Structures are given as structure tokens and as C-alpha cells.
Amino acid sequence: MAPGAARRARRRVRGALPAGARARSAEDWWWDQLAPSGSGYHLLQSDSMLLVLPGPGPARTRVQRRAARRTQRLLPPASRASAAKARPRAAPAPEPQQGPDPGWGDRIPLEILVQIFGLLVAADGPMPFLGRAARVCRRWHEASSQPALWHTVTLSPPLAGRLAKSGAKAEKKVLASLEWLMPNRFSQLQRLTLIHWKSQVHPVLKLVSESCPRLTFLKLSDCHGVTPDTLVMLAKACPQLHSLDIQHSMVESTAVVNFLEEAGPRMRKLWLTYSSQTTAILGALLGSCCPQLQVLEVSTGINRNSTPLQLPVEALQKGCPQLQVLRLLNLMWLPKPPGRVVTPGPGFPSLEELCLAGCTCNFVSNEALGRLLHGSPHLRLLDLRGCARITPAGLHDLPCQELEQLHLGLYGTSDRLTLAKEGSHLLTQKWCHTLRELDLSGQGFSEKDLEQALATFSATPGGSPPALCSVNLRGTRVTPSTVSSVISSCTGLLYLNLESCRCLPRGLKRAYRGQEEVQWCLEQLLTSLPSSS
Image (cartoon, rainbow, N blue to C red; front, side, top):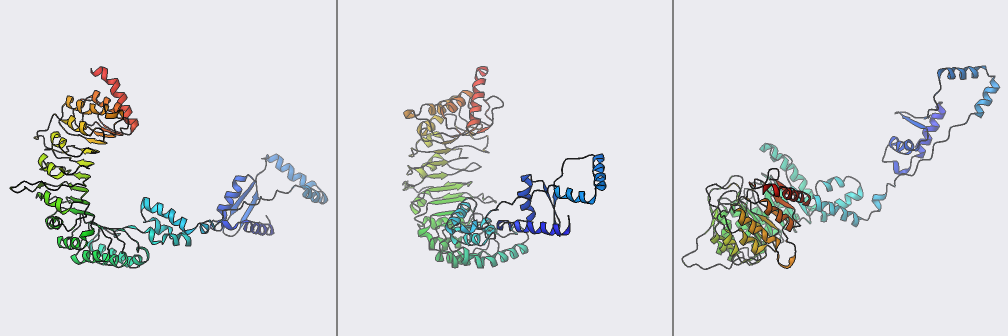
């Protein structure tokens, strides 16, 4: 191609580029436009020029090419000129189609864009999405900067877990960024979580108290250096703060007690880790400093405390009458013995969930459970995993009539314990119409007792199908006929655990998840029943 023709080709290429292709390279755009069209042109691009070559024609042999050149040399000059004029010219390149309009993002109303971002934030949290979206364009930066999107934030130093000096430097860098973020982004912050902060907790919470008046929930996980003044300052500056989670953090009991005395009347939820300082915090709760408390959870930390927790049940019922959720997880606890005059407490009339689960044997008995739940008719969830001293007769005497989840599994218990072999039918007969989840793993009920208990789901009152959707029978003496009857009766069964069931055939002792797997188990059991009999 002649130099003049090459320049004209480059001008045509540059002039044909639409406005929407500015963000993309010319090479990408031309490959999208010309390569699929089959126009017979090839693009060869270098740093200095763009060369357009015609596509290859039909292949000719060497003899034909030599004959064509010989014929051209034998023709007179006049004939050569006329042949060149008569030669057909290549068809011009098709006009490229109009590319996408680069202004589509500017035409989306800001309110709609904020709603779209709000859906993503609700699903995955504000970070790192909002930080990345702010770098796309001005409109996205404006949308991602709306304080309404920054309602839930989790902050952790980037070098958490490293050396102490490196961690302190990382915390200072994050603190420098928070000095700008707090007033400009976190003015509507509602839920804040701090993880792995070792030395800068007080400056961070001071910024929160100055810029986040709408804070309602604060969680400190693996944080150190929380002083009494820090939490009291936060309680005074954030009048809507009603939930505090300090599990697995080193917080002085004085700090928590002072915080509860300041924010106690509005407190709704409290999460604690059991330690030697828990007694002082529970003492504040027993003194009615949090009359509106609805959720109380006390669990063990990484280093287990072998000292049993004595819980004055009746005093807690008087101090927290609105309690809806009570969790004492993996604790060695026992109710404080009542005085000489046995007077039942007011109970927890609003209690809906009670979790006393533990991996080791505890001191929970039928008498202690009755003291806790004698005034709780609206209980929905009862988790007694590891409570080997609880019997079906004790559960049958509870006042709750619409229990939905019952967990009685025994995990890691000693073989020396004497487990009940009868009475499981008392549980299913009382709650077969409302029970959705049942866990009897590790229990010692006999084959006939389990058959009688699970048969109640096939005769639910009113003829309606049972609501049972999850059954854990791991390690029990359940038989194939009993399992098949349960699957046939409970059409909505989604989880069935048959691991280590000694009475079942080999190959079926596993957990089944989903209706397809549960139905497959039913088919296998039905085919194995004649041979087993």
C-alpha cells in the first residue's frame, strides 16, 4: 500500500470511531465491528500505523502465477493501462455500527442508583463494594457516598494477628482514615463491629460518640483496652444504643456495670463471655438495672472456666421480666438453691427461646428446668443438648404447648450415664402438631419406644400433614420400618440424620439433605424391608 493510501486509511479508521468507543481501544472496537462481518479485510496495527489489507482470494498454483506475470509483461503499455482501469475495485469497508452511549450512567436518577446499591449492601455489607463503586465515575461516587448506605460497618486492622508493633501501626493508619470517614460517611451508622483492636479502641469509640448519634448496636470481638470511661461516654452520646456484645473481649466488669447503669433502662440485648467478672455483671442485672432486656447470652471463651456458675433463677426473673431469649451456652452452671421457704418466682412470661446446650455433662435437672420455665407458655425453642439428666416426664410437665424446636441430642457424654429407655412418646404426643425440628441423637430409647413415639406423626389431629421438617436420630435404635413410616407421613421432611444407627442396613447410615435424598432413602428402606424380615 502506498504511503498516501495508508494515511487515508488511518484517517478513515479514526473518523469512523463512535463517541461511545472512547473508553475502549480502537483495536478492540474494530475487532468487534469488522471481524464478525466477514467483509474480507484484515487489520494489522502497530505503534505507528494501521494497515488495511484485502482478504485472500482463491489459491492459484505457481504455474498460473508465472503465466499471469508473463502475460502482463508481453502486453503493450496501452493495454496495461486499460486493464488496470477495468480491474474491479475492492468494496469499501462497511460503516461501523454506533457503539453504546457512554452517558447511560449519568441518566439514572440518583435515588434509583442508591436503592440498587442498598440492595447490594443489604446482601454483602457496605465494604468493599461501596469503596470500589466510588471509583467508577462521579455519579457512582455520589451515590456510594450517601450516609444512609453506611448503616452497618465492621472495622478490623489490616495487620491483625501480626506482631504487636505492626498491629499498633496498622491501627493508627485506620484511625487516621476514620477521622475523615466518621463525620462524612458514618453519620447514620447504626451497627458497628470492632474486631482485633488492641490499643486504639478508646480513640475509635470517641470518634463514634462524636459522629454517630444513631448507633444502636456495638460489638467488640477480641478487643483490649476498653476502659470504664469509654463505654460510659458512648452510652451518653448515643441515646439509641440498646445492644452490646462484648464476647471474647477483655473488658473490665466495672466498665460494663457503669455502662448498664447509664444505658440500662433502654438495653434490649446483651452478650457476655463467662469469666470471674461475670458475677458482678449479673449482679447488676439482678438489681433491675435492665428491666427491658430481651436477649441475654452467656457463653464460655476459648479458655474454659471450670468454676460452676450459680444462677439465682428467681432473682433473674424479677430483674429481667421481659426476657425473650436466654442462652447459657457450654457452661457449667446450676441454679442457686432456694431458701428455706420455697416460693416460685414470677417466671419468664415472654420467653420464646431457652438454650442450655453444652458439650459436657451439666447439672441441669427436671427441677431446675421447671424453675426456669414454669411461667413460660409461649416457648418456641428448647435446646437441651448435653443435658443428660432431663427426662421425658420432666419435659411433659412444662406449660408450653406450641413448641417448634426440641433438641435433646447427647454429644460426647460419658458411657457411665444411665439414659432413659422409655418415654419418648410423651414428647411427640404433646408437640406433634407444632414440632418442626426434633433432635434425639445419642438417646437410649428402645426400638419399640421410638416406634411408638414417631408413629404419632402419622396420626396428626385434623388430618393435616405434620410440620416436621428436620429429624436427627443419630446413634439411636430406630428401625427401618419406623424410619420409612416417618418419611411417608412427613411429606415436608428436608433433613434426616441416620448416622451410627445400628438397626439400619449398611449403606443407609448417613445424613440426608433435601427431599430427593430423603425419598431415595425411603425407596431403599422399602426394598430392604422384606429381606430384613
